[in-house]
Each structure stands twice: as C-alpha cells, then as structure tokens.
Length: 365
Length: 130
Image (tube, rainbow over all chains, first blue to last red; front, top):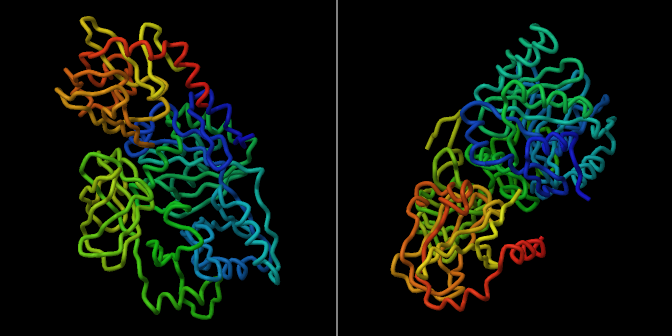
C-alpha cells in the first residue's frame, strides 16, 4: 500500500499519471512531462512535494546542534538569508543527505529527502546526545513548490485575495533565500528548478484549498518527471545519483557548501573531509552535453579523451529547453572538455563542462 | 483510457499492424506502449529496402524515461518509413495508430499473421504484464 499526500484526490482530478516514488503514489506527469517542463521555464508551474520530510529543531541547544550536524554553517542564516542548502555527512565524509535548513522564529526547520527519511531521523537523533534539543517531524505539514518567472506574482495575487495586500507584499518582496511565516504558512524563496519561485510549507489540512486557489490563478500542475529534467538543466544534484554515503561533497560539485571557517567548528565528517581536501580529490562532477540523437542515462560509461579510467554518468535525460540530451557525470579530475559516452553498445561524442545548462530560463552553455 | 482498436492485429511486444491491401501492412506502437513510455524524443526507423524477418529488431523508440526496441511483427521488405517522426516524435504520443505510424512492409509470408494477437488477446497480455 503506497503512501499518499493530502493532494492525492486533486492529482486524480487533474488526470495525473501516478507512479511509485520512494513508497509514495506521486504524479510523474499530468499529460505531458515536456509540456510541463516548458510551462515552468516560460511561465509558472506547481509541484506537490509533500512527500518530503519536514523536521523542526528547537531548544536552547538547537544552534550548537545544527552547527555540529551540518557541513554548512547555520550562522549564515540572518537578515535577508533565511534558507540555506547543506549536506549532512557521516564520519567518513560521505553524504547522508542534502537538505535545506530554514530559520524559524524559534528554532529551525529542515527539509530532507523522502527516500532517506528513516536513516536521516535516526542519524539526527543519534547526533543529538548532549544537546538540549527537541527534534519533531512535522507530518502534520504539506509542501507545494511554485516555480517559474511568474511564480512570485501569481502567489502574491492568491495571498492578496485571501489575506491582505500587506501579507502579499511580504511575500512579493522576499529576497532570494529569504523566508517569512504568515499565520500557518511558511514561504521561502527557494526551489529546485533553476527558476525563481517559492516553496510553501503549510498545514496538511489547508493544502488542498491552497492548491486549487493556485490552479484557479492559472498555475499548471507539474509532475516529478519534469521536476527531474528541470533540476538537471539547472545542474542540481539528486540524492541517490550524484550523492550517496560513499561520495564526498568535494567530488559532487558541493565544495562551496562546506563552511570550513571558523576552524573551531566541529561538524560530523570534518576530519575525514579535511584530509581529503588536503590530499586533493581524485574525481569531479561535470556536466555532459550530447547533440547526437539519443539520451544520456545514469550508469552509462563515459570515456574522457586522453584518460584511461572511465567516468560514469550519474544522471541523464533529454533536455526540453535545449532540445538534446544532457547529464551529470563523475570523471577523473584531470578530464578535459571532450569524451565519448557508451550508449546501447555505441560510442557517441559528448562535451564536458561545469554543471549547469539553463539559468532563469536562459541557456547558458 | 488506453485504446486498442479492434480492426488491428497486435504483437506481445506492443506493435500494432494494419492491413492496407495487396500485402502491404503499416506498423506502429500501441496506445498502451506510448502511455507507458511517456513523451517520445527520438525514433530510430529502419531503411527503405531493409529485409526483415518476424521478430527482428526494426528500430527503437527513446522517451524521456526509457529506450525501447521495436520488432517486426511479420517478415517482409520495408517499403516506406514515416519521416515526420524525425522532427516530431511526439506524434507517436498524440496519434499512435494514425499519424504516428512507423513503417510499412510488403509481407513475404501472410501465414505469419495467424500467430499475431487480436485486440482482446493483446489487452489480456498487457494485463498479465501489470
């Protein structure tokens, strides 16, 4: 029996094709994954992301605890910045999960992945020993992401109609990575698509009405299929593909998320990661572009020109915005800008570059 | 609702077959197959003049989700291919039995038709897959 979000019947009404996603019955699309992808890049789309795990951390020890638990530093949360992307490392420097951490009026809120829920909660509990914190999973909350160039304006209009112009301005004027809580709803200007937009965390018993208000405002429902092509075009990692417990953030294009300073801050995995940093990493994560006909997919071999050891695709798909296939791959750090991918027995030429192919609706490669 | 027209023949590998007269048959993939594949992005077609035997690989369909081989349901010579699919592969999703046809064969052995499935048998075979 698969788990269902509070939006399950809404998905049925919108003709969603439902699939098993990490034990949840979720929409992979509502008719056409490619059309939904374009609607986010060109206008606005909304995603049910209620399958993700929301965990609130409170108590006098919350700050110290999270500065131990997370490789990025939550002291960066202040002023305009109310949301932070971080990884959570095991003691060998491998990634347990990647997540967003948000400041609350009292304490902090983490949003972690769906498939890693049980192990994340167990790890968080284990690390809490000696800290004065309460860790509370918010299974009473749901989450909707609204993404695209028109997202802020459309959500602001929905808020103005329901609440007030004042509340609406609070949301419309959020800086990137800003956040604000209005009554029961937590709005953050964050996302996973490379577009502007919001992620909204709200009570599960309010989300269906909210979803239909957004729908009435002309926002297209978008499934998890398009979510993957959007994040891939944006060069963003997906846990289980670019990240896992055997993978260092330094080999996953996430060195920028490690807050080494202040040196006195002990976070889990710091010792192992410092050794690796000082030794020099062996691999790097690159973007892959193939203009030949065909689709790059995870686990295909990638032969980098002039290098013996093959690399491996960690993710791949067709890019609707570019019109050909893109991917992410782990390759030796010496790899240059060209190679060949082995697809169904044939080798096809590819370009290697820094991850990231589309930003704010524009192709940037 | 997935459609399976009763005037066509089917293979378990999700190809449909339409008899156009004089031993010419048109071949494509079923509504069930296009629905399972999702948005099609590339199609590989055989070449005009290719001699195919029943169950030979005759091409491939690549969707955002997966790549899938196409098999010749019967033996014959390829006499036409649907070039529209090169630039508009989504035609397969939109019209799997009409504009989304893949190629046409001049059948070499009409008796092979007997081992194909009718609509009801094909639907049953898809239910067994699920």
